[in-house]
Amino acid sequence: MQDCQLDGGNAFYDVQLPDAVLNLKQGVGRLLRDVNDSGVIIIFDKRLVSRPYGEIF
Image (cartoon, rainbow, N blue to C red; front, side, top):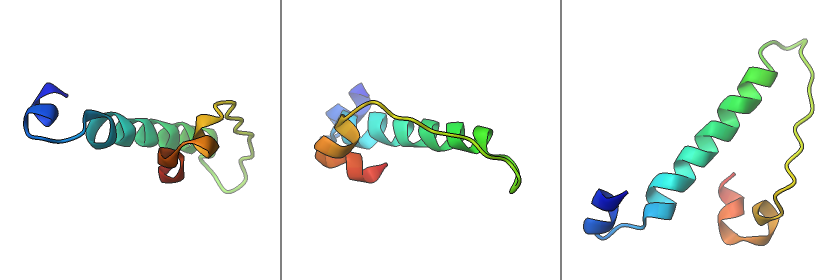
């Protein structure tokens, strides 16, 4: 993250956010491995709808 900041980037948007999106997608993928699988994903973090970066998810 320090390298990102030193290069003038935003560590949150350029490093942490893409990593969080990937982790969420992988978690959903582990829940639903087959077309016959079913599951429930509940996200209690209201930042996904109240913050601008929530749209990325």
